[in-house]
Amino acid sequence: MFDMEGTPTFCESPHRNSLDTAIPGSEYVDGRDTGRTGEWRDKRWRGTATGGLVTLQAGASLRTEFEGSALSIVLPPNFVPPGPNYGPCPNGSFDVCIDGVESRHVSLSGAGREVLVGNGLSGGKHEAVVRCIPPKGDEAGDNSWGICGFRAWTGTPSAVRFQVCGHPLLGDLRADVEGPVRFSRSVREARWGWVSIVVPAPGVYRAKLKALGWKEETVEFSVSAAGTTKTLDPLRMTLEAPADPVEPRPLAANEPLVLICMGHANTWGQETAEYIARLVRLWNAHRPHAVILANEVNPAYVAGALRGLESPWVTGSGNHSMGGFEAFLDGRHLEARIGPAHLVAAGMEAADDGFEARLSRFARDASLRVFAGFQADAPWRRILAEKVRFYYYAHNLVRGIRFEENGTTYLRKPDANSYFRVEIGPPHAFEAPIRIERFTVRRED
Image (cartoon, rainbow, N blue to C red; front, side, top):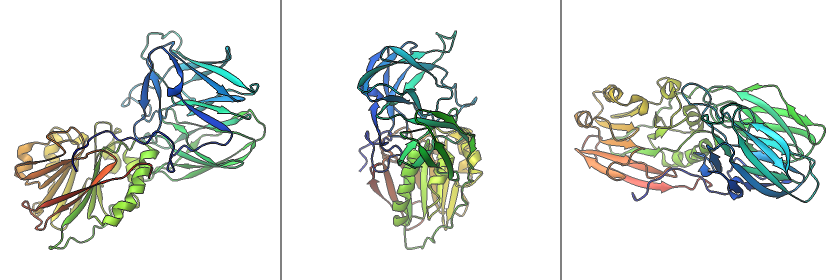
């Protein structure tokens, strides 16, 4: 049961719960299946099924052959938004040549996720070359480029683009597009906030924009002529505050405290948030007294994904978390009291001296104490002094997935496609027995 550990991932190919579905009249080519010049490396963007290539080398290029009358390039989601806490934005660009003729210069600072780079081509086979260009005068600067793939079109597609803002925590979002064709896409590039949607034919379209943790918005747009690109007015999505904790079900003296524990799910954005929301239906069937999510990333998407949960939940930040993780939660979902049991969470933001303060929050009359940490580095003596019976964490592996230390059971997440059902007690005390069962759910299910 405790023989695996790893980083979460989605399956390679689109599946029935993918954000990205096939678009009629087009064929997608993965960037990793192209010819390469220069130093490129394969990359999977965390918490998504999106793969592609990245490089730090100006002048590096990709070459692909395609058949059709138009071509678009698909760019990464870049979950980390701009700002001093998150590092520099991509500042390079691409030059695109089709059949030896320069067709488009694409700046990474406002392109969105998909950009038309060739349209109205003659039928038959073509060759496209994408070359990395640094900002002018900055050939030796700190630049990076990334590309997911290419999309070849049989007709004459058009595009709309617009900015979507809502909060620094807003990353990608899902667009469910209806009109002459229907498809879904992850459409927002998070660092600059640009959304781009490419459609295969003229007509009237409606795009439902969804980001768990924000109120859904709908954009309607019309394409009157093929081969056009239209810029729409900016849109603001409304961030929802985390829901107040629900009342836990009573903990009877003769029954165990039931916990669902998961960690390091890499909830950067919409795709992982939708996966967590699907898991909520399973977790509700367990009827837990509480759910623990350790070492999480984006608290807004986490809170949105857990809105359907029928029990309290606690969470904490980790090594990839967005800034202001606990400030967004505003004191909620950092601890839960369930009869004689008390759950307290402390993420990476509470490291070092903060652990002492968080451990001191255990109620004096709490006979069963559970701690949810970033990793197993809280002060051992204080853990012993507080008589913490169960410690769940989701980062560095210490001595195996499960180990015992001075009467405390430590449990680490095995992989982020699995969760634990943990039963503690009775009695609801430091000497309580602990039973652990692991469940693994494929992200495409």
